[in-house]
Each structure stands twice: as structure tokens, then as C-alpha cells.
Amino acid sequence: MSFKKKIFKFSVSQKIFAFIGYLYILFVCYTSKIQIINSALPEKLWRENKPFILAFWHGQLMMIGHVWKSKAVLNMLASSHSDGRFGAYIAGHFNLKNVSIMSKNKSPSLRKVFKILKDKNYIGITPDGPRGPNKKVSEGIIKIAIHSQVPIIPLGFASNKNLKLKSWDSFLITYPFSKCRFVWGEPITIPSSTKEHDLNKYRNFLEEKINDCMESAEKNLNA
Image 1: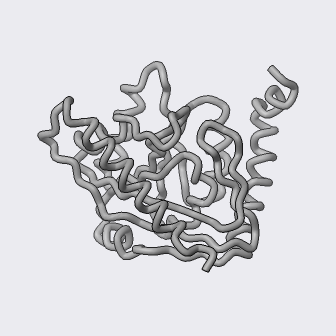
Image 2: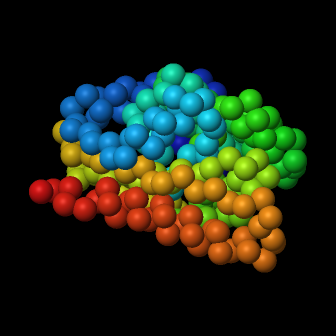
């Protein structure tokens, strides 16, 4: 393990870097022109106090705090390893809260997720996380939607000045003074009668809808 990775694993180091990251995101938001399309879709559910599952790609995590306009907390599913803890520290500065998922024993973690949704709260999931493959929906989010009967709302983001890291998720770092756009998609409700052999159909469908939102966000962004 490199010296940098060892340093990053310390809680104090992560909190310092997370605060720097938080300040950077604030600066990006303050200096950039940010457009939010179809915001009426989540606003209706917020007003009616109806829960939903927010779905977006892992590589677009950086700016997600800006699009969450509800006073209600967004509970983000995250891994319990060091990357997940770092994300939790940044999320804590916004109206976001990380819910740790143990990779070896998911049952207790999922019970926590179902309780959050039953209590009419909100869940955020990056369906290609925490380790990929990039922009491929895993079956976890589909199963949660089936058993909870809570709709999924896809979300896409784009910016015209950015850096894509050479990471598995092509993590997007938006620069200050950018043009940015979020696009909310229509809510997706998956029938409770869905069978195991139908999971792939809904995985592909959600994948398509998130990508549609991304394409809409990217369209004419430099115009």
C-alpha cells in the first residue's frame, strides 16, 4: 500500500480532505450556471411526502448535493470501506446521509433501507457502485424497488468544463465557472409481481433511462 493510501485511510485525514472537497464544491456551485430540468417531478413527491429512490451513476456523485432541494434528508447507500467513509464526511456537510452497506452481509443493511422507505424517507443509489462495472445497473436497486413498491427516479448531470478521472467510474470533477445541467426523469414503478427472470429487463430499462437523462443534460450545453 502506498504512503498516500495509508494517510487517506486515517479518519482525521479523511475529514480534512472532505472539508476541502466540500469547500471546492461550494465554489463550483457559486461560480457556475446550473440548470435543473423537470424539477416538478421530485417536487410533487416531496410535497406529498411520498418516498422515492434516486438513481444516478457513481461517476456523477460530486454535484448531487446541489440538486437535492428538499428539507428531507437524502439517505445515500454507500460501501463501508474507506471510500464510503470519505463520501460520508462530504455528505455530512450537505443535506445527505450515508447508509453503509456491508458487502459480506447485506441483509441487516437492507432491512435498514426498507425501514427508511417505509418511514417515507428518501434513498439515493448509484446502481453501478460501489465497484462497477461503470454505467451498468446492478439488480440490487431493482429488488429494493420491487419489495418496497417505491418508485425510482433517474437523474443525469453534465458540465461543460470538467475532468474525468481514470477511475473505474470515470469520476467527473466539474470545474468552477461551468455551465451545468441536471435532468430528472419520470418515476419508474416496478410491479411487485416481477419474477426473477424479468430482473434483467428492468435493469436494462433503468440503465436506458439514466443514460437518456445524461444525454439530455449534455445536449447543447455549450450553446
